[in-house]
Every structure is written in C-alpha cells, then in structure tokens.
Image (cartoon, rainbow, N blue to C red; front, side, top):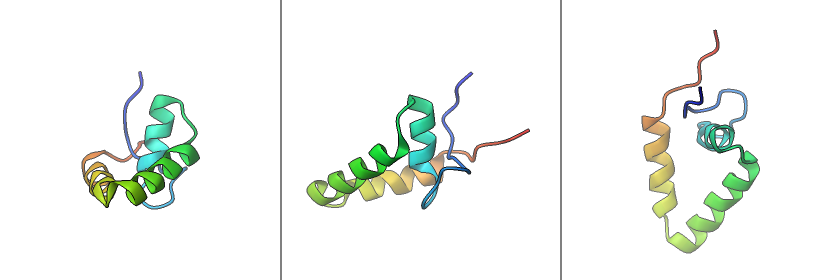
Length: 63
C-alpha cells in the first residue's frame, strides 16, 4: 500500500520532493524544477507550500 511520506534516501532539503516523486511515480528532479519555476513565477507561494509539507508529512520508515 502506498503512503505519502518524506523520503530519507532521495532528499535535498527535507525529502518532500523525493516522497512526492515516489508516491506519484515521477522523477523527483522534475518536481524540484517545478518548485523552482513556480517559486520564480508564483512570488514565494510554493516556498510556503513546501514548508507546510515538510512540517506535516511523516518521515519514511524502514523496517
């Protein structure tokens, strides 16, 4: 079963894009570039979204 969580292996800052990429089966690099482009054209709103996701999403667990 899939669960949305921050990645511990594929992370640059907090692991949000790595976790989203794994959940949606998308390359995390594309998500990172999307966040950068959205930040440039979105006047900082994506930064707030990233911070909220970093605070809300649980860490990925390995058993």
